[in-house]
Length: 462
Ligand code: 4AD
Ligand code: MG
Image (cartoon, rainbow, N blue to C red; front, side, top):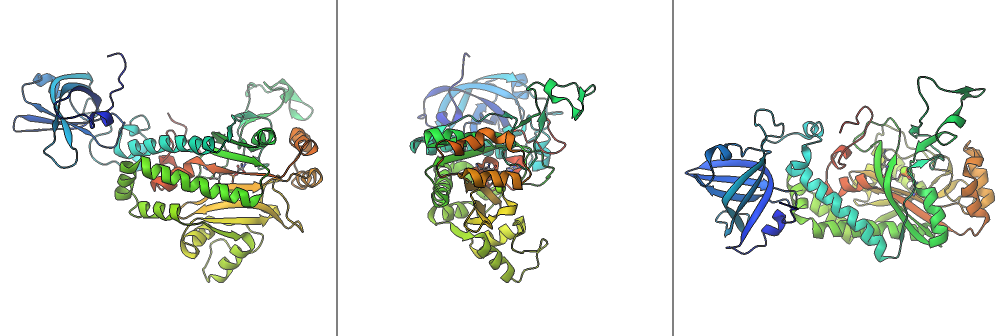
């Protein structure tokens, strides 16, 4: 064994009579009438490979080690499968147990586990049916993201992860330091960060947007795709402290162009996954969300609704619903309002635009009159906000005014302001939360179940 490239997925394509060797982790073993039936999976596809071995072909003590979770290698002959499901199975001739898994203690036994139990088994859950499917979809979706942008001439930019500026101006950043926390250097203003690694306070980035803007004003159309971090203490099924974001940024683009791209992007991604991860999606449809495939089909083939914030508020006020969070012009939309708009009013994704200035970030372009900004949130049924974006304020004086009005230190944004001093142009972009998108395409209801290793308040195991 030097390197295995013979995935189970490809073994299913072999003709009966072909000799081959299969590798994988045992899902189950069943013994009946002098025959052993062994199901193995190597992650390459949803379907398990069935291995059929006559009793006596392998030593009994070897067969005894073939229990759920063990890693085995079997050489044999591909034969037509008499059973339903798979067209072929493997008639095993030589069995080797590469790594046993003691059944008394191996945690991921054959029975169904609930998702919470699986979260605590972060080192084994990738071997389960559910997480096999989740991470194959995640892989396909990542690839589709690059494919979409590369096909359209967007430049891929790696935004920094360590930063000294707050891209959202919201203060929800993890601080990064090499100072000795037990013995902090002090100055007249408290901790003396001039002695810290970067000579000033530094953080994990909340967004690559501001750096993407630098690149858009040189390469026209760009995108980032990387990890972002938020130290907000929101323990909800939709929030992570570490999540991935895709942030396209386009020069010579306004809010209409931005909405068009967001819609085309989401439809492309869904169509790609529906085409390339069919078995996995069918499993989610059957096991977790019976409307999943119909919902995705519907998103791909219908235009999204587009509604200004002011109209959305009127719809909510006139709905006659009792809201936990009261609706009025000027208040941010809460999850219950977003769900009403997407699930009851429009029954599809909705792009809400032109939010009040006060509830949105400093960099969004002010509309005529100054009450609202050229913001857009794409809301998805069952998820709520999946994309947040805007046309950016490209006018220097207005931007400076907004930075001051939000109480931010304009000296930190000197380079961002320089972009408005030299060669400024209307530009726009958005951020798609990768895990929110994963929830949407898989129908999984908890964001912790669509990322390999979730980080949430109090949890950073594995
Ligand atoms: O709306 P947000 O905060 O927008 C930005 O960060 C902008 N800089 C994007 C841009 O215009 N380039 O975040 C964007 C998206 C949200 O719509 C949501 O999908 C996701 O990121 N998101 C989270 N996902 C998981 N956990 C969290 N804590 C998230 N916070 C935001
Ligand atoms: Mg947002």
